[in-house]
Amino acid sequence: MEPFPGLAGFVLIVGNARSGSTLMGAVLDGHPRMVIANETSASATFWRGLDGRDILREVWDNAERNAGLGRPSEGYSYQIGPAPSRKREVVVAGDKIFNPATLLLHGDHGLIPSLEERLAVPVRLIYAVRNPFDTIATMHRRSGAPLADRIRWYFIHCDAAEALRARLPSDRFLESHHDDLLATPDEELARLCGFLGVELDDEHRRAVRNALFASPRRTRSQVAWTDADVDAVRAGIDRFACLTRYAGASADLARVAAS
Image (tube, rainbow, N blue to C red; front, side, top):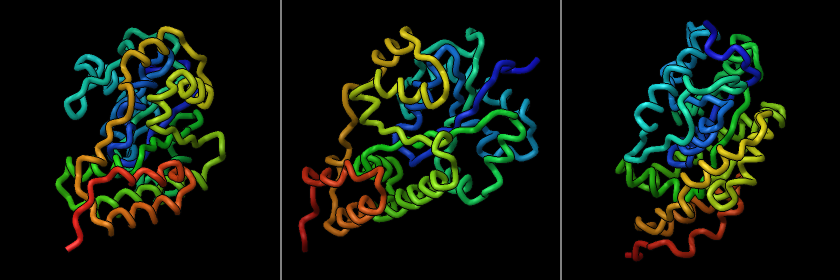
């Protein structure tokens, strides 16, 4: 039996760690006509040796298993909508892939065309973006790695995402900002659903609104930044049009006193 007999599209959610990509996957998975997995083993190995049915079966199994557990991640429960087994007429499937996989997805130009060939549907990418100061601060706190190391890692992923954007048609790549989803969920859901070719669902919109935080976590204020760290983030922001809205976000940072 085919996991999704009416499938019309496949979506990969990419981006930096701690940028809201897990929440994005849960939000889309909550829609009654979408099933979005959270980091399948298939995507971790870049779908090597798998045909389209194998890939979709992993998506279904992963999403079903996560739904039964409440879609847990980092101490939070992200499950919003029904499990795949309770959905009918699913038209979009997908995967929130492991964050480092963005680099290899960018490096191997044949991966996306190969995936489309095996699935026989268009593959689209959603790029999850969050304030870089908050993202880097959260990466630093969770990993224990120095801020300077996380800053480099963050912007390496930005380079990869922008290379993917440049390589794909405009109707196959969409950036979505974490703060937009939290501040204006109805508008952002309409944009996401329009991009994926899925109609809005009122029950889904209500469920998403109930599940979201009121505002993004300001983890940038919970770590100590050197002037060099702040300058490095600002320089990185200047390189990417999608980050310009965050250029003034360093005013409230806790600074390390100069020695």
